[in-house]
Image 1 (cartoon, rainbow over the protein chains, first blue to last red):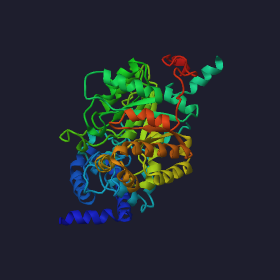
Image 2: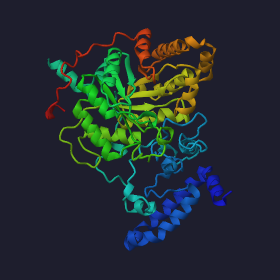
Image 3: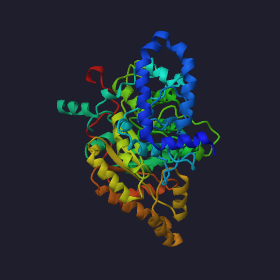
Image 4: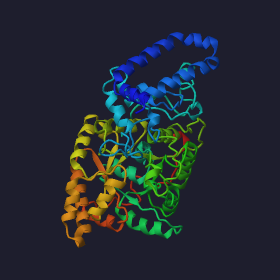
Length: 169
Length: 334
């Protein structure tokens, strides 16, 4: 068995650890964000991208969509879903919790839900609405797009979740 | 007259289905099996029967990833003949540009109900070699159409001079894992704009009752109309096929066993009576606003099922609340 894969799956089953690692990474990037901005995002990205890709590939089987929402999806990469769903499981999940498309794989959203229950800080973000994927950011470093705010919904048609009120029928 | 107009303002789309649901009547929708033919007569023949017994006819969008006449085309035929379609839109085959264009076109033809789906994967259909698109998911789709309707804008922010008036639907499948999250996902869909819900085939009543209890606890039954998916089974072999080959369909062993024990000649009648029993039981559950009848390759049974379940007569068309369903609201009225 591939050792890097087994490390990844062990880590993914310990979302509490990953959540802490996520918070540390976020803390570091918020600190160094202004430095990176001063140097220029375009200059820094070629150095950061390989590091990000390597670590996230091992831990999350990352697909480099360039707009990371891991903390809001139970530290499970939603792009590993064959349908690329960003807002939860489709209705095709099998009774045993496996994927409709790949019968041998557990549905990543079933796993994400189980993991989110073990995440004290970001677990509740599972119920947030995620905007559609910006396909222009594919292959970019999500850490840089987060700092440069390029990962925010570009389209004005998509309003921030906080603006939505559930209307009574 | 004034009263009627102020009343009309409350309606989102003015569709017949919306009128029936808002009037508090138990709604019935049914699925039209799309033909593998270029002959429109097959659509008209099916619609003639269905329109008498239901409030909305679902035009499927290549369900099960099998190629059939498209849902937009079926809706064009149905609206032309004065029927009330529910246009199903799936994200499997088209990207956001194509879908927004189709929705606008459908609204122009008189479509008032749209059901937003993620769609079954290409691998379960007749052409598994095809590329799967999934540019958006069902929640993105709901929110996109809601933005088009309420804000009069495309996803890009570009303005739509005459926004479509649509009653938005979504699907829900309470019968597959993660069970505890399914009601919360329903809440997400409501947040994204769903006005009504059509569920997957309901055979497992115990599971459905649990789901509805959670839905009521969250207060979601007050925010959305839930139509329960039901349908007849032809035989135990058809049941076995559906639960193994059709994604997301769960059929408990008791039902398969009950069909197996029945005589060969009476299996179809037994399947029908199971369906009627389920309708009568879900009707009693608090928070259920209607049923959605899906009878794959057994369309002739739909009318019998609805009649024998005691759901006839349907509210008359044209609706008294909406004497002119095609009348457009002026800009200042919106």
